[in-house]
Image (tube, rainbow, N blue to C red; front, top):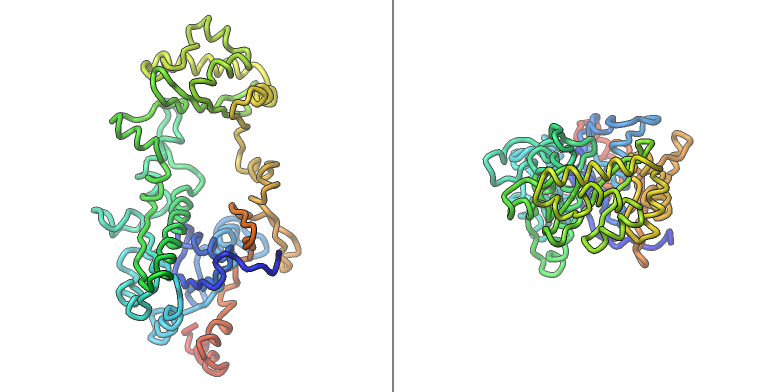
Length: 403
């Protein structure tokens, strides 16, 4: 398996990208066998190299987002630095950047300039807001994507203030959509020889992540029901809801209207629900008071026993259900580990193995391979030699602080 090529073997990407949304698409490419060259500022590098948790000089942030790529330091403000970048772009398949809108053009690596060098180039640009709107020129971060895209409502319970979450869901959703978009454009370029610019944004990623709930909200012209995800119609309601057990441990279950009575019977909740007039789930869609009565009764009942007991009963009745994991619990979950979604990688320089993200894909013929993030400028000599620079010329570039 170790010698098998990845599905993107032979693909080359050059990136002037930082942070998270701008790096994860190319990290995923590297996992799948692509050659990814990350351009960094000489002597400084991507400032996220010191973000997150540090272990022996290794950053949890940088490692997660840049594993498997190559680092080339390059002063893009110098003529020689831009010349080297253009040389790399000439035979690249992908170019990526997530600079503040307008900065790439100002610094000599905008789309119009690079497509003259390589008409088949797929040029990927990530922004905060999307470029067409009134705030398109503003910088954006994960917090902006979360704030504008609607997901803050998903984190708030009834009566609570909306807030953004601790996980960078705007960055990650944008990154994954960018990965899909660049592959679609790459497929077209490979078939036609015609490259193009692919634009994504943090706000756009979150709006897509809101899925059918956003569509339903627009069609109803009203915000969704809070406290639980109750959907469907009065006659055919469904629910996905989280409740705490007697020890405060949360669990979730989700069911369609046909499973409601069966699930409540399996839990032995039905008599109490009927007694309180809370057994008709459809009423939650037409009355806030009825919704609150149903949910408060369920909360009271789930608080009478352990999470393990409720999950045993629900799963025996074939009701979709699971414990609600913290991040730490998720990293040790039996299914997460068995499927390789979390793995361990050896870091000889610090003398230990560390847990890292695995891969979300299982390829039968072209498996993904986990790399490690590069040291700053680690691949300078290798990459420049590949462009035809001699050892003497590389030494001169280093002396001139071009690399």
